[in-house]
Length: 423
Figure 1 (cartoon, rainbow, N blue to C red):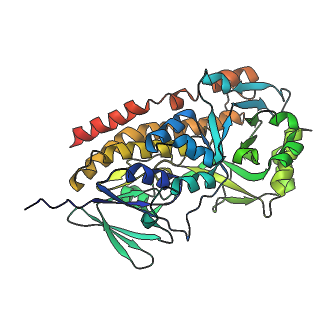
Figure 2: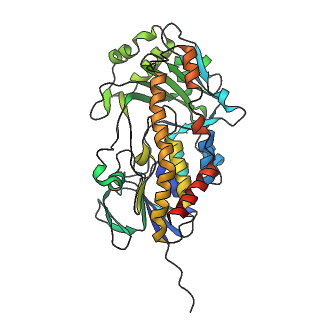
Figure 3: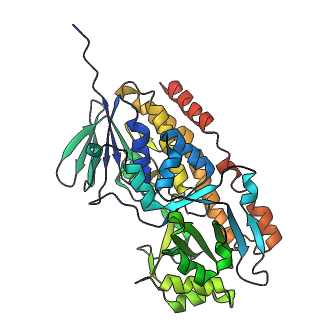
C-alpha cells in the first residue's frame, strides 16, 4: 500500500498590506505549505504615499520573487540617483549637507514608488483563492495538539499550524505574542509628526522650482525643528511632498488639523524660502489637511510565542527617517521564507519562529533607535551638531552603513543555523 501524501502545513498570514503580501510571496513557493492571507478591510489596500527601497531591500525582494526588477517597474518605481540633504533654514540655508549618491560607490540606486502600486504588484501573482478580504481577526486560541484556532468577526473559525501577524502597528497578533506585557511594550509616539501629499509632477515642479527636478532625486530640506522633503513617483507622473516636524504634545488620536497659521509658525524661521511657502500651499490644498504622529515600538521582548509570531510593523514599527520600514518587512519575509523551507513538519514551527526572533529582533531594534536619532539630527535637535553644515555632514554620512551592509545570504544562513540549533 502506497504511503499517504502528508497533509500540507497550514500557515495563516494576518494582514494584507506590504508586509503580509511580501511574506505570502516568500512562502507560496514551498509546495509543502498551504498559505492563506487575511485582510480585515473590505479590500486589500495601502495607506500613505511613497515607499523607498534601497539596493539591499531590492536584493532582499529578489530573494523572494524571481522577477523583482520587473515587478518594481510595473509598480512605477523611479530610480533615485541621489538623496540630497540641504540646510533649509537659518544663516546656512541652501548649503548642501550630504548627497547619498556619494555612498553608492558605483552601486545601483534606490527606488521610490507608490505604496498602493507596490502592493498591487505583490498581490498580482498570488492565487486568488488564498486572498481573504473583510476577515477581521477577533481571537487566537492555541489548541492542545499544537494547532492554532483563529476566530473571525464574521463568525468563521479556522485552524492553522502557524500564524504570522503582519497586521500593523496596532495589530491583534502582537498582543497574543506578548501576552501580559503587551501594554508595556505597545507603540508610542516617536516625537515627530508629518503630513504627506501627492501632487502631479508638473505642478510640484512649478511650485517648488524646476531646478530641483532636473534629475530624479529625493530632496530633504533640514531645518530648526522641521524638515521638508519630496520624492518623484509613478514613472515621474507624481511627486510626494512631506512636511515633518518635532512633536512635543502628541494628540491621543495621532492626528492634528493643519492650518496656515500653524504651519507658518512651524516654519517661521525659513523666512522667504520658496520650498517652505510651496510646501505649505501644497499641504493646505488637501481637504481637511492633517498631520499624523509618527509612532514606534521602543522595545519588544520577543517576536514569537509558540506557533505564532509577528513580522513587519506588527513586530518593529519605526519612524521613517532612514526609510527602512518596508525594507525590514522584506527582510522578515526573506528570513521566514528560508526557515519555512526547512520546516518539514508542524512540530518544527516553534524552532523556526524562535530562530526568526533571535536573528531579526536585534537588527530591527537597532534600526528603530537609529531612525529616531536620525530624525533629531535632521531637525537640528542633536545638541552636539545643531544645524552646523560641517558637523551635520560628518554625523549623517555613516548612518546608513549598517543598514545597507547586510549580507542577505549570511543573514539567511545564520537563521537556518539557529533553527537547527533550536531543534
